Image 1 (cartoon, one colour):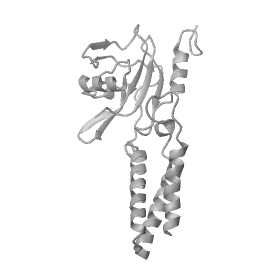
Image 2 (tube, one colour):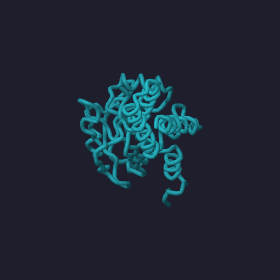
Image 3 (cartoon, helix red, strand yellow):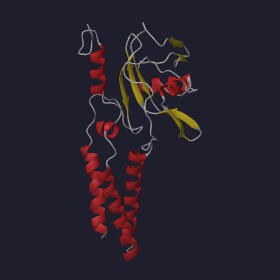
Image 4 (cartoon, chains in turn blue, brown):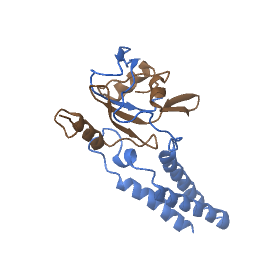
Length: 135
Length: 95
């Protein structure tokens, strides 16, 4: 059972690493890690593999299995944490639809310069990207 | 745009070496107007639901994007396609 477990976990992690292709457009990260939805099949394979490893450890009490299962749990934990953290957001819907006016605002930028924009035009077109923050 | 204060945004811009503007909305003024305030999104702090909005010169919203996770972002080709529709003479241009 320990070898099946190792095959599942190390095989899945190996597949993940070898399938990553650097993004041509992005300076940071990989296309698959930034745009892909949660890879449930991959995560399920990892969890089943880790479960089999733990079961083998408990049933067989084989000393050589301890570092293998330890490494498996570390890998499964890291991959799961990466893909699942911040992955569950409460229901939310944008309050404004396409065609409606973007709200007026007055805000400081990174150099503490004030940007004041009215709700209607004329104004400079802009792409607003709301992100979680960098801390 | 984020709830980060300007100095945090400045450090991020320097780190990423990009030239676009980072607006600070520490009180969430726009987050409430847009309905994208994620209460306690991080412990002790409200943050924005991940959202992108394209606005034209008349102030009208022309394209929006919302994702289900903070990890997932709009693909560059989706954003560029929306920008092209906005451009004068583009597929979305009227008249």
